[in-house]
Image (cartoon, rainbow, N blue to C red; front, side, top):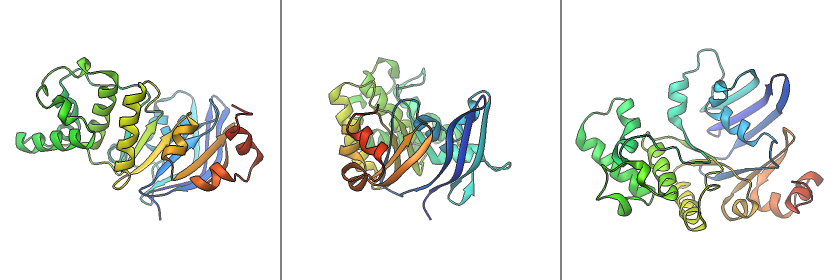
Length: 250
């Protein structure tokens, strides 16, 4: 069974449907791109994966999301443990108001790691994985806010990796980046999928074509179709998917 199995997931905001009876499995250690027009449910779907949907007002959720076989919406679900499994990279970098070092060490400290030598190793390893170490190794104790936007996004990725997640949830992670920084992040995703399952919400079809192993297409809250990227992008079964890929609907 995949890390993530979704079964008849329905979400409503103030009584208005945002997702309607969504069922699928997310392939392990691949990049799954969630595509579709604005307002079709992409970010809502991603927020369900780590229970961030709980922070929204007047939300009703039905159905199941199974992570490693456990229903994350069950009454006794361990949300803290869940969020440790599910790293999140948002559209805009959200660095913590502290040093570069402390941003990466924040999660491990929160989970009980106190030895400086261990923290030093985690910080270096995660910054190397995020292709940032060479740029910041001599200013680890400088404010993270002094980094460029592209560097901040890679720092957020390093911070997410520091708690050893199983899945990376990425909500349009290159939308606010310059083209060179976006290329850096995309290359990191290609490398990271060897060890992580990556779920990527993107509004950039070219990005989905470059990165995706698997495609999920939402339209007006409905899961229209999903499958291997080559099949969905080149021979979609549903007319709505074809029109979206051709730019007829957006």
